[in-house]
Figure (cartoon, rainbow, N blue to C red):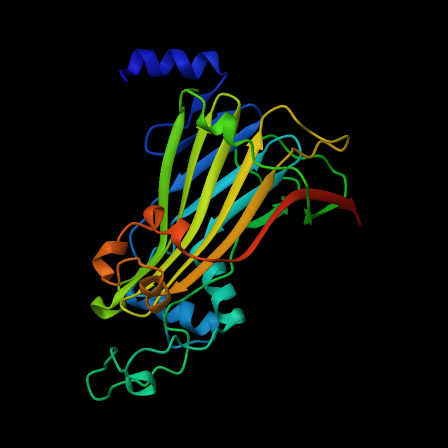
Length: 293
């Protein structure tokens, strides 16, 4: 698409890109910005370890990268970052995935010692992003001040569903970006990856937060959070309609082989091609709800 055509589509949708050097746009009462920054340096990693109360971190932590979506009228901010995801990992504290060598598997080594894995080295997180109503005066300079109502937010179970037909329509994509929050290649024994992707169309925005784990020859784990907001739907307090669908899948290579699927790790490099083969552990749809405090 050339710049003129892109400009026409943005104008028709009432959207405006952020200034040069920034990735995002303003559209239909939403301010959306993605930030892709370098990995944290050693001093920053040490600071994070202290704040998180751990001596273990993924190989690559993109600590200054983030995705932020702010609803201008209500002041609601939905955001995604690595620190909160790792905080959730620390809180969940899953046992380490057992591998053929079990407790003696020591793929991480330090100069003078090898480390027995007694923690969740996969950095699996239940993180689904964070949502707040920003206090007056703390919103971005392009965002108007939110209403002064004292509201809290929570996700409540809902029978509503994400409109897959709207997402598969041929609406132009006005904005798209992918943000990597952290990644670890498990010392060439697989991959642990947390990313968030967002796309914005004239009538809605949609994002996918995905944790993808493959421990070669042992286990695959997929934790998806899809979030969807159709423009123009707000409750009486001005809160926009936002749905999220959480789906956790998990399966062992042994179980996949027993069902006739390949047992070679190379066959599972793309989680998009894997998800339908993994059993669902948990699935739910919720709607963002506000209440007075």
